[in-house]
Length: 246
Ligand code: BV8
Ligand code: ZN
Image (cartoon, rainbow, N blue to C red):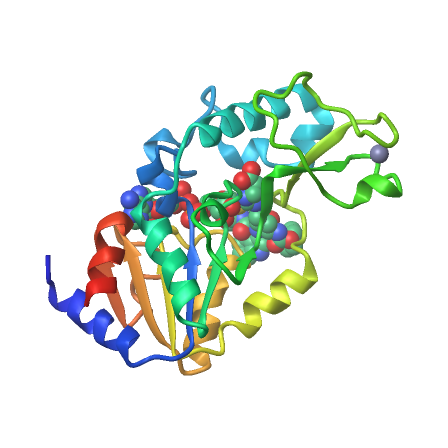
């Protein structure tokens, strides 16, 4: 499956020291995890964007937790795919490789990725909704299914919320800074993201402005396709092993 785009991208990656990769839901599709905008992105006919908000949680915390518990159960039954494995190996073998993900599923971590920047948090961490002193720091809870919905804060017995960044909520400034610093690179590659959610979608423009060569891997054209140097139309779980062999 050697296309011209693939050959050009492989040459760029071979000649690069500092490589930054941004992933989205498409990288977990081959693991059976529905994407956000794909046909399978709906839950009970509700768009993800409407459930992944503080307002939705305020209105109906049990409903929002039923969605997150459903997703945790699905992710628990999934395994990292070849795309996750290739990226994990790159981070282990090449010190100049930085991995940034929008995914909260933990599959990059399970594949053994190093230097992973998690932009939108983790579905396996919980936080106190009341922001009590102890509970404002995330705690790990990998129980799936959760025994009670909504789960409670172990410190103040108030409501617990998922340790993710919801729409309308700001990202952790330290995480945004780390991701922005990683745009100072030789090659910036996006994999499996529709490039519509900000500030994540702005990183490729940032890298381009700083002189990086830019590559996109996606099964279909996106908002970013017209601005990258090389757009590879293909499945991440097939393209990344081919790029790795390139
Ligand atoms: C914020 C965690 C300050 C929760 C998520 C500027 C312009 C416009 C709007 C905004 C802007 N700045 C801020 C906003 C508002 C908003 C935003 O961007 N809205 C969008 C919808 C327009 N951003 C925010 O609210 C952010 N906060 O900016 O705070 C502020 C606040 C208010 C107003 C101003 C400033 C917070 C955003 C984070 C939200 N949390 N997730 C959870 O998961 O439950 S976002 C969530 O959706 C994911 O993390 C991910 O980021 C996004 C989904 O995108 P993708 O991962 O790309 O997935 P998608 O399904 O869309 O696409 C999959 C792609 O894969 C497709 O292209 C498909 O073709 C491809 N694909 C499929 N299979 C494969 C494949 N590719 C390769 N191989 C395959 N096999
Ligand atoms: Zn608490």
